[in-house]
Image (cartoon, rainbow, N blue to C red; front, side, top):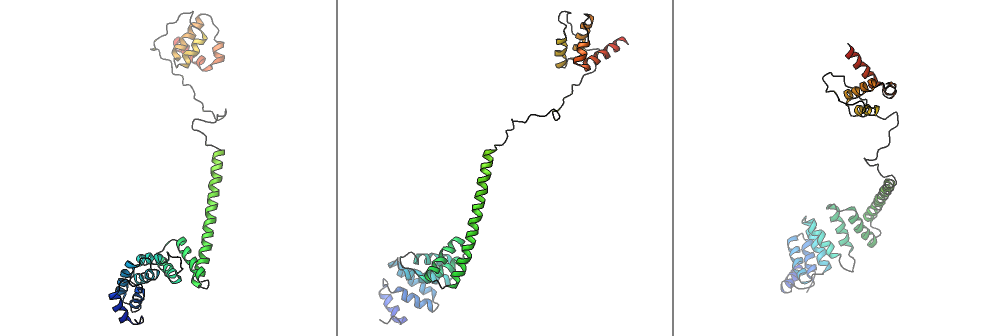
Length: 253
């Protein structure tokens, strides 16, 4: 059989579809642009010879020409899953994956393989050099970011945030003042019935702190009647003393 003859190959393949020569016939169809027959021969041949490297490579070429880039990528990858290297399959894989916009890391791996098989390949040289610089920059940026996070984490551990419950004591100048509002004396306020024995300056203070100013004034009146000196309450709280005097003046009028 003359393998250079398309007719003889077709006749032989028709009687021997399990032949190992199927890639030769597929290549004949491919070179003539008959992609349908080329794909059909590859599919039949790979059905018998699943691990034929050249068969997968030719199927990848057919799929690429037909615009089926993902199918072509799969076929080229299959053709590279063998111990023997295949430069053309690797080049075609790089071409397809570039069109599919695969990750830079994936492209770098396969273009680097091309450079290993063909050190003089200019396309591979340019791509590998460019990607090598880009990957180094990315690694450097990641390392810097990781270092910043570690420093921030250590600082956070060293200076834990102040709890909402923990408040710094206010200085004398910044302490808020809550002035006590002394209500005006009302004559209709129910009088506090207290004996002379229970009337003390301490009771005056207690009543005032409870907001019972009128009752506190009544106790002061009892104390004055007992002959107690009001200088003590005057020195202690001028406001209540002044209010007491005001009440006395109102009563006198």
